[in-house]
Length: 138
Image 1 (cartoon, rainbow, N blue to C red):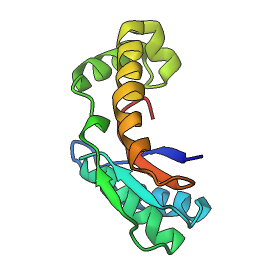
Image 2 (image 1 turned 180 degrees about the horizontal axis):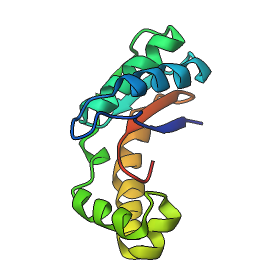
Image 3 (image 1 turned 90 degrees about the horizontal axis):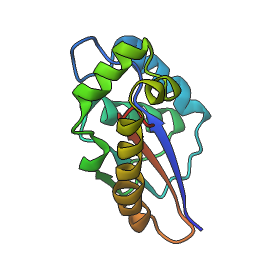
Image 4 (image 1 turned 30 degrees about the vertical axis):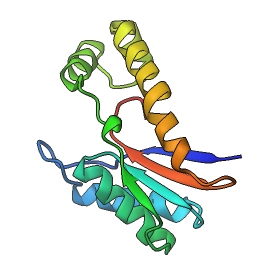
């Protein structure tokens, strides 16, 4: 059996790909509640995801295990997600599904078939992994 825990990045600075001071506090706080035995970690290419992972691991006291940056954790349809969230008045998946069900379905399918499959292949048998991404689906 393999386990993969998915987390979204903490609060970022407005108009920047970096955590805000509040985001660093959030990430460290969440990190204190995480397990300390990850065999592998994954992050999206976004700096805010890597920073969140660093604060998570700092809070757990775990050294950086084997890791990988997964480009597929970035959506190429970010403008569509933003437009749907504005129209819905919320970034919640249920609200986005009401506004653009095709976007949510297609991106969910892509994430499940390609990205998650790739990550599961890298987790050792019996291992646990942690992912920090920034797609709205996480």
